[in-house]
Image (cartoon, rainbow, N blue to C red; front, side):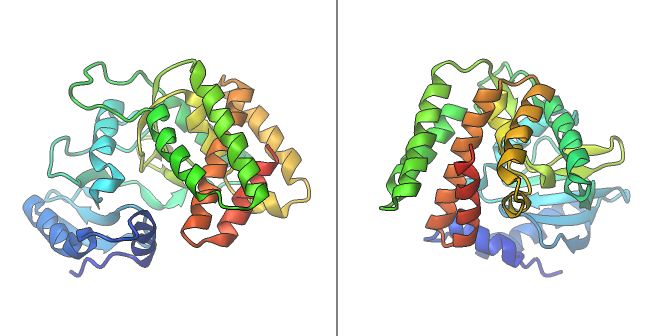
Length: 302
């Protein structure tokens, strides 16, 4: 079978590494080797797929359905493996192969085409929040086994790029300044350290068999829960922007999610601002002006 990377993956990897690397060139052979060594039967490549990995629906030698995932080093697949192993299937997809080749993960098969996003908005937020709560556990005690990036480290890298990419647009510059000021204040006294999903949103929660909903695709890090919850606040941002009551709905969503998950409302608002501005500035930088406009307008409501 030809393991051609989906267009969505090629485009997304081009944004994260504009100068390119040879991972995509080596991907078809790496996928064939991963399938052969595990004696897997390939059903199909998942389309449109993710933005950071190739996802292949397979069956193990005993007929059990599974998912083979191949990701480049820049997607931090070993961090994902370590987090999934630590969660042990509680709230997240089960890792079927704790130790394997770098960049290759064998996972339990969920229902790849059925995410929480398919539910009505209020129900989707409720189910997503409940799933996220289960992931917020103490980080592994043995840091020698794997050191996760911290919120301070990841946002520090992002902050440097934000400063350099703001440009001469006064409105964008003001939003970047506000986001960076919020980050500084939030990092001064973080309330807890938990293992976080890192990129949690409704589309990252899929229907499962052993439990109704399970999270997939983490980019894990360690830090406060409000940072993790912040990405969920802006889910379906295009619907929020299109609504005449979008700003009020956003503020109610911040309040509702903070109360339901026992997170400080102002800290959630601050991290939501930072993450929305960071995503908006990044979208502008890589040539997605429509996405940038939506995200920065959303950030202005906060």
